[in-house]
Length: 163
Image (tube, rainbow, N blue to C red; front, side, top):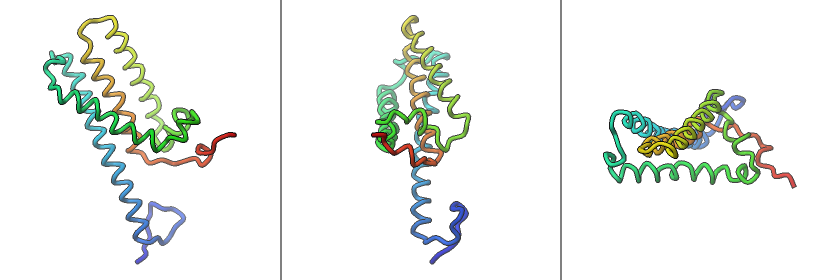
């Protein structure tokens, strides 16, 4: 059975299998983004909690392990999908922000600065280890959340290697 679908401009009739495949990919991307957003929210809660007396000892060891290893669960697929752009060193300048709203680029730069400031404070100040860990979770979970939530609009020239 064929039917029209508005997500595909220019196509009036598509087979159900194509529609279902595209919707399944979109659903999986959104699910991964929601899981990454949970890690982001946990990082924010730990960061706020650090100002109200939360310490590294008050967090369970498994919380720290799961949130720290969870970063790799969300970042490694990005690096494997975008490997050609990473090799060409165009990932952070051309590929990462494709299809994302304009506010994502300044937000990532602001979180990078936020993490760098906390890293410097960690080097100077004693007891800032929980805040450093929380800011790293915030930064490293924000990037995959944005990457997986917003679909890519690929430029075919990004994949070509200049030889």
